[in-house]
Length: 184
View 1 (cartoon, rainbow, N blue to C red):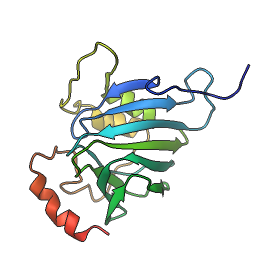
View 2 (cartoon, one colour):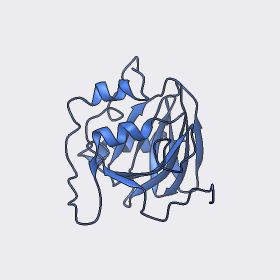
View 3 (cartoon, rainbow, N blue to C red):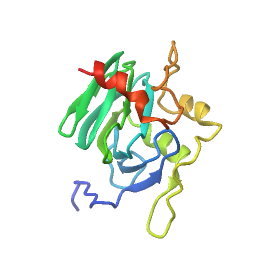
């Protein structure tokens, strides 16, 4: 029997994500899955235009990203950067990071977390995605999201993220103009 894990396109565990992301995730590997290697998790995340991942940090995890499609504004340890398809990034423990899809097409990235745990958060706040299931987005973040974050792989940020890097959905794209001007 092969020890190589193979996940065909679209065959990972999929979940819709609430506001402000409004997209979906697909868990490609996690220690709890049959045949998966221990120690890390990986998946795809897609954000529609104006979808975002609020600024956050992980207390003991390194997160690795490879941007597959689209573009976004990213806030990385306080610096706003333009991120495009083909970009590779590594965020060590405690590095603040957040993403906003300011483009016209979906923004899709591969993420990997070492050690694992991000998938538990996505599943806890998400809704199952699959054939025949309706797209529930946008839907509000569950009221218990903060406690789910702290029980999984997120740390409390001090100071907390400011708009537009917070958990509020973006409804007016013009709020991104100042960020576009300062992005490196």
